Length: 316
Length: 316
View 1: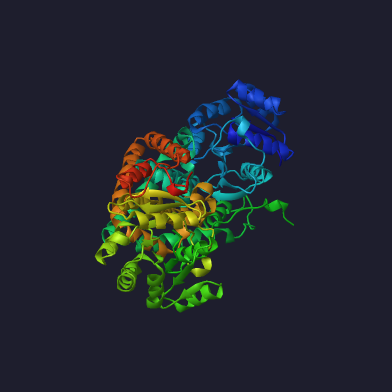
View 2 (view 1 turned 120 degrees about the vertical axis):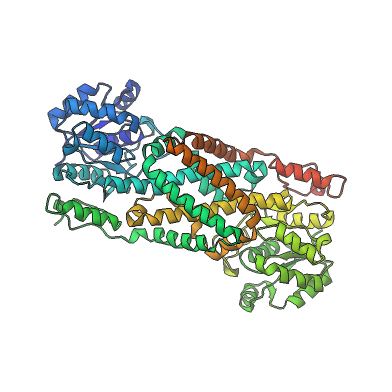
């Protein structure tokens, strides 16, 4: 079950993954296009190289689980190399958007061995040096349950997520992308807009800012290039969610013409209470990867907010 | 200089003020319409009564600084009582909006003795029991520098703010209200809208929510009635600021049609950096209340983000 792990891309997420998989006792090695990052990883005691063909030849030889951990704009060229050097290896990724990566996997003929993933973890930092073996501890790691996923590859991906200390949330790629737009990408656009609204008020306004402004703008401190990469890769879903939010705010503006905010605040408070209660969802226990209907059952469980804490065969 | 303090309204803010003024060694007493709250304050060792006329008669007798600490909808009736029982007392308030309170003070003939105030402090809780003598420690307390303010009353209000541990930011009522719309009321509407956007995604979406959603929605946990009271009292300014924010988001939506968020993220990041640097502003030192141009000088200092840390006559 515990195949070697081959991490392609050693930035914050890939670098943390190489560390976490190693800490879990897995054989793990990595590639990074920049020789500096590969050298830094080697200096820290990890097996890392800037030779993509060589790393993939090793993955092919030892049947490693290949993890795509490069930014979205680099995914196409890396998948092309995977298709050339190691097309039979189980394949996953940790990119923040799932539909576009799945489409590229299909394009390169890698669909049958690909099961997408996304650990919901990160910091505003980037690069190998920012990595942390504990980054994924107690995080929610989305694993794809799109139609046609291979149950063996699926278990490889789930095992990796669990080994890194995460719990696994099963979701279709499209559902993941819409969720990410709602709980991450829209909040980033709102934080940027609030920061602008404050600064446009000048120094007096900024001097009066307290907790609601501090928290509402916090993620506007993220490097713009990182926010752009996330949001632009998920532009389809983000457009839909932003349109919906614009409708909400436009309705609030109309109500405010009559001096009322009651409709928005009542609905927003209820929604926030629902969010605060989300932790009460139960764990997924009755799933057998490969059995009839297994993907549909996992999809339904994910939609209920449930997560997988162990692999089924590990239970008594 | 240290006249008694008469607090009308013993909720979170008024109750904290009664405690803070007492802790600073000031003679302080209060009124609350609900006999329960007055009894609770008395049980905690403070002088509190549900007899408004009696409390105002005492304020008139001892020349107390009267502080209006009731919610905006109750301000009119309380000011009417002040005009009837204690029209010569120095008068201030701690209501979250300043233009509407100033207008009511004028209406009741109390303008000459009124200097508005607003401590930028609070929690999501409410009521006497939620009060805290330390609530105003290191907060920014806006004190009005509208034309025509009486320098003696102004110093009474500043002394109270400083006694409670705050620093004083001078601002015109209209400037305060626009600033509050930018750094408090708009953030509340955004938090409600984000909470709704998350909940509309269902349990899967809420299960995946991490730090950006948690912080961006935090103040949606505030009781809707409190948010409504704040926002609706400041509806004029909030409409203008919300229109501006809708323009920003609509422009972002247009850019996203071309798959780009770069313009918004660059501007939002710069605005957030300016906010983070706001603490570097200097203290106001050269002001003499009552001297020619004193209000204009204070307005200009407030617009530069400066604050008063002591009263001028207390310096060497």
